[in-house]
Length: 449
Image (tube, rainbow, N blue to C red; front, side, top):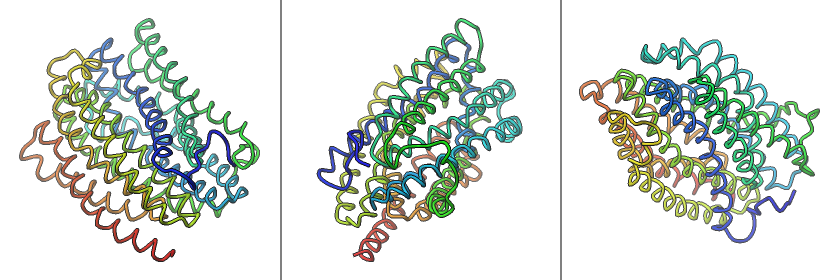
């Protein structure tokens, strides 16, 4: 299963391999977010703040609906990486084909949900009346591409499990260029609005997912995908679900808390929604750097733990923490320092821009706390403990946010006070997770030894 594209996670140096794994992965995620950023920038500049708010109002809803299935792709990553660590080619192949089957089913389930419940969900979160029709149109078109979004998530997870983060980046570079060009064509030349940018996103997702499927079909050995072999292997499905469902449920509950925040945000008016949509892009960019190192923890530790290299697992954890902290601080404060320039891509409305600056300053200042949570969660999933970080994050992040929104926030209702719930929930959760991780990893490695 060795290839020049793969990273040997079981032997040799650690720091350079983590960087080689994480940087292309971060770049891929950032590029994927640029699909949404391009949507928001084009409609904000050429269709106005109402269209900008309509696109932005959907981000928390989309995350809510897709996170369970994205969690399953995390399970696929861990399971495939584990079989690689055990040098078990037969079960590696079975895990890959099972993962692809899950992606197909997941995509079509989400497509149906998106078409059937777009309007009721938008009404449930109190989407402002002046943008709800445009928001519904965007959401329905976006979800037409959901089978391909799921296919991309699972195929990239499969490649990531063996250290190949470069080809997902190549696929997104190609589809990203197509997305930007189509955005401009549909909105500027064809005078479409949110329907144009949503259609461009669907087409670009089709391109990126099919490129990765093509790469896997032309692999050799255990990683070669044969369409006739795509079916469920029950034992492997259970393994994927055991890790993926807790991760997915964590994402779902996490998104529910964000939907509660979005509801409070919607009540502040379309300017607040538009400002949040603009600032959120830069939060995502910072988060994707964090997530890349978290995925590195899952994959590197997953392989080494399966190979019973426990001391190397501990070295990997320390290295990822150092690299993750440095990277998160650099990107977060770069966006804070350049906030006026960054927001200008999305809006020329002064009131919207001022609110966007507030969100950027508050959340990116404390993004390093989120880094602690994500990396420790990744380390625990790598050694097979997926439920524990999920439970801690559900209680520490989601519970605190929901309680805050419905009890404390109404007494101090403002855009600024709403934004402070993010660092507050991160701080409490990070402290709990540090303590729990210390005892779990110590126990896990001692038992194994």
